[in-house]
Length: 502
Image 1: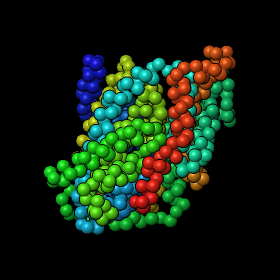
Image 2: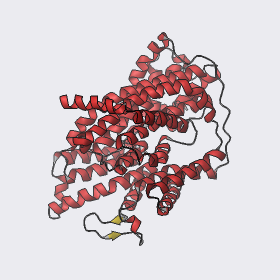
Image 3: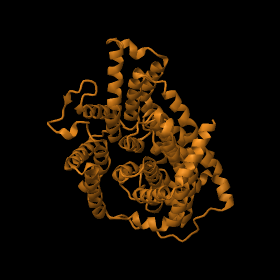
Image 4: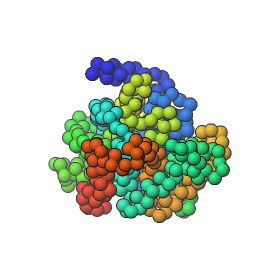
């Protein structure tokens, strides 16, 4: 206990270093800009700017990526409120009440509510991050090769199932990622596999190039094939953004409920902020004393949606850091960032010297919420103008950043080619309804699962019963089944309510 408290205290001291403060400010600002641009996403923003963190300390790099993540989730509410176009899917429910408030001349109040609710949702999610992550980390230390095999299968099934409208297409996405993960040298025997004579593929597909291609370049291609859009002009607003004491008191229970909802959905791998925002919004409506305002501009609805989607941020980091299973597509990219820094997600992040980096990131994640509140309240009027940026500027800007970012990894043009190939793969995947998050997750988890399976069979002399030899294995097998069935469960929880709102 004393050791944990010491790590927490030292984490805050390290997080307050000037370089980390600058990383928070820059990350939150960039994230908000990306979030309020319709068509872009938090995952795309983190993937696009991942190369910027290569030369940073691991803790500083992760803090910056975490700041971009939080900023982008909040930033989506700006365009949702002002031009009725959610910047990210996580703000889809915010647009329902937020835009109605704008039409009533209450855009400032709507933005202030979104900012304050986002702050409290993200801040409260840090509680579970601090207390649940180390406990799960200690549990993961007991895992052997069979457990790691089933853990990788669990990660693949749940994100493939929840993140795709079709379970079959979700599993197909995972299978494609697994196939791509076999490129490179065999981890057990050193045999070349699908390298096509390219020595640069010795260690397999570069994860960063794949991330940039799948999430960023593919989005540029999607935007490019459509008619160039000139965004609607953002509404000018002059009303007060800060809420009164009574208004804050009124939304406090809503924020509390949405925090619990968002945190639980974040911890459940694969669910994501887009589901949380609708569940938070519907819960706010059910418990509201002023149900008649919903659909006509209720700031309680804005608070319920924004608190829930921001509460997902801290919760989704827990399975990624402790078990190596990203909670959603953004944490899949963050996981790639950890691997690039030479760190393996799992129990080792909470012991030894690595624990200092982990707790510095945790402390930074807490401070990020305060910077998001300040920058959001002070800069909303300026960010509102960014929301109407034309695709004619957006597409070439994203493309240039993709090329420069992938080339900067090893100063090798082969990485640019790999990024472009994955950009086309990501574009085709979207066309056919496959899921890019499942592809990249399989690319990361595939080698872990392969090593776990082959080492288990090696230890048992080829006897497959070793894969069913411990209670933990059976628990993970049950979770795999639950992961495959999770789309049905999610539809029952959120599907009918979303249809009612639409």
